Image (cartoon, rainbow, N blue to C red):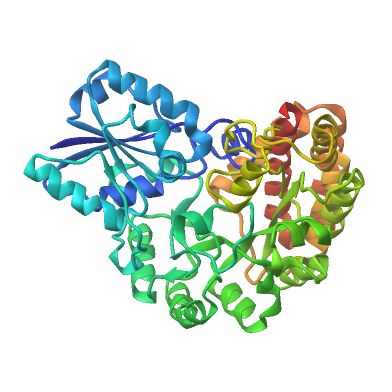
Length: 492
């Protein structure tokens, strides 16, 4: 059996880092981890190829080679998915589809794909493979249970060129104990966090280490600390492995704000090499936090929590939302103030959107307020329901937030705020690719850039060399990120 695995193209977004990738000569920020994992579940005697449209083109001869095309996608990749499916249909290729997009809206694809492998592949893929071997594969495969991650194989990294990516990814857990109204994670993966054992996780790290990877590894859990007991049990083994290998990786992950409440967990994560964590901070408006059931954020000083993590060597990336029913027109100024005071440099501000099958989606549907399908990108300046605030006022206010916080002056102040509080556990030494990126930054930001951004670039360089010399690589990286964020903000 010849199978072509196809990963659709991402549009330009906040997290795509398109404008920053040229500084480090990479094609894409992240590899298609889901498809690589599914590939490892397929029969060993099958002939597999993988095409990631974010790093290469999909040619007709690639499709013509295959007996089956397998595709997985996120909501945001929907335009690329439809283009791929049309090409498959025109060439008469059978398509097997799975992943978050197809799980969220399977009914939209009944006539476009031959087989839908829904829920989690560890459970639903084996019966499809068995039926395929027997010559009677079904249209849809579903499951009402969640697999333990001991069933999950090591991804097939041999199917891609890892040098084309800025960051590699692995998964440690699935599921989240919280049930925020706007979030689809519990719909997809449940509220019981399922965690890999230390040996399994370390085995996956050993594989990418043996491939020669050094640098950032994104642990793509939606809440890494969802099961604190198991994570604390696993981290000492990870620390030992990292020490024995001279810390070849630094980890990025996602977690809830209550990480700041647990000094033991902070210490273990920092010692294990976690230096960045994305946290959904959402809003300083307590009424909005109550509205969306973000209970872990309520009644706390979130700015102080962020500062604490920064001081322990963990940079916080923040997610923020406007458009809650409880938001008034003062929220735009409050969000800007909240972001600037926290020193969260990478602040993803989005308009509230209702994702399919979430509690928010169901509530708005019952209230006859849903309008269109979501694009899957809450930073593109669109909203898919009727908000309580005037829609034009909301979108205009959202644009003001984004364009303000990523203006050179506000962004530079936030970088300085962060560097003043950040105390990394290990000094960040400049590697060969860092030096290359630094040289490119001088040209693109210091010479070619417009007057005001040039001024802040040179000011940041001089200030970091004088006051934050140990953090100089971090400062330059953040200025490069700022270039990307400014470009994206202008398109909103």
